[in-house]
Image (tube, rainbow, N blue to C red; front, side, top):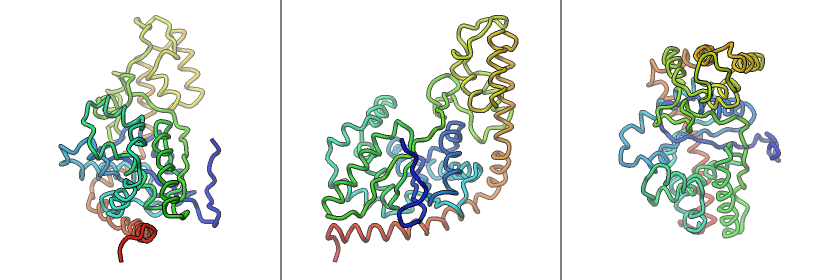
Length: 339
């Protein structure tokens, strides 16, 4: 896929829209797969980064009590990782009521069959064993409203989200056709190059599965967790030679967090049984802790004044709300709504 340029045709930076469900403290997978990319994008594009608290209700509507705290914890991680509110728009989804109105209006012209074929929804319902509520089935339409309310042009996504973005483009095409306009841009994917980090047990990394390293974990917590990470299952004894390619967690982490020369040395010493799995994990823990040290130090400082963080988020919302109001007014006019 061709990498989109940072400039729109009117010489203004293109608008990038992305968000995360408010699930609380973030883990290494979020840092490697999302936050590092966001930090790079915010200096090149006009970025809108959203705390998706409404989306959290699609799977946690029976227990909403922690969502506010989850939002705060997530924003602490964003700021600690280098997201700069002076360079990017940060806002909570629920603070932009125009998103809900746009979601409703878009749902009026979205056929059910489009939603029935969304693959990630089927996986979510199957894997989590949850009830398919109206909100969950309409998840892709709400995602579309999230993007379009700020007229997002580019959306950083993983391959598993491409189908949802394709649906968003279909909705844009239908809206523009119905209104005989070209009001909404067709959002394009920005595929991330970051590798997907597996959980410590080899499954998908998830805090709920207790197989992740949190960004806010201490050095000792990180080291302790890594000691439990699975390695080459065929390497039973310390003196047995290993096969790095079969080490689906620890060696994959080396490929992300270790410099090339250390990756090569680790592979050679594994194959020759010079280095044992325990030593390999300890060296990995040292590298990860060293790379996370600046983030963790900043987070500790920010967490001492959460009131300031909340104020920062509240003050930042107004810029996005201004854009959202302009968008929804134009949508109402195009759909012949209101007086």
